[in-house]
Image (cartoon, rainbow, N blue to C red; front, side, top):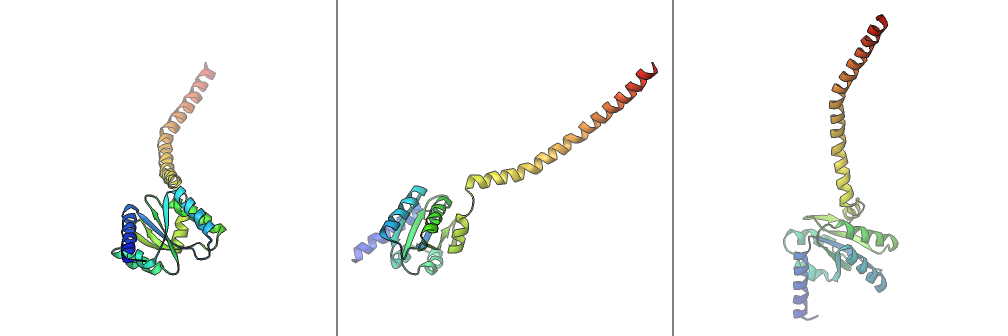
Length: 178
């Protein structure tokens, strides 16, 4: 590969890195071309962009602490997935693909401005969707508030019911005397 071609690839990688919030590095040794095509299609449908890159060119495109953290994940042939926004759908699709193809391995990545290893990527992939997590959070906040409101309503309600029972009892005794 000529120097100008390498510079072009590094420039393309830098643009992709600037556009993406998250980066997933995976190993694909042992996957067929058909498998890689299917994997790229599923990643694209989930909102990511996968690219097979040379490690040296990716390291040149990376800057700062990302380079130091991600260099440790670059062993063997690697594919890089660029994700803008929430990485969970892309990780879920890649994880589902990996269940049927044991050759796909999560090596590490850069998620939400932090370096993560392969096991952490698998954990992120197993999380429920964002909407479901927000619903769980809302339910956990709403439950105690609803119980507190019911407790506050119970005091005057019980007082009224007690006074009503007393009035009925006294009213019943007055009617029996007459």
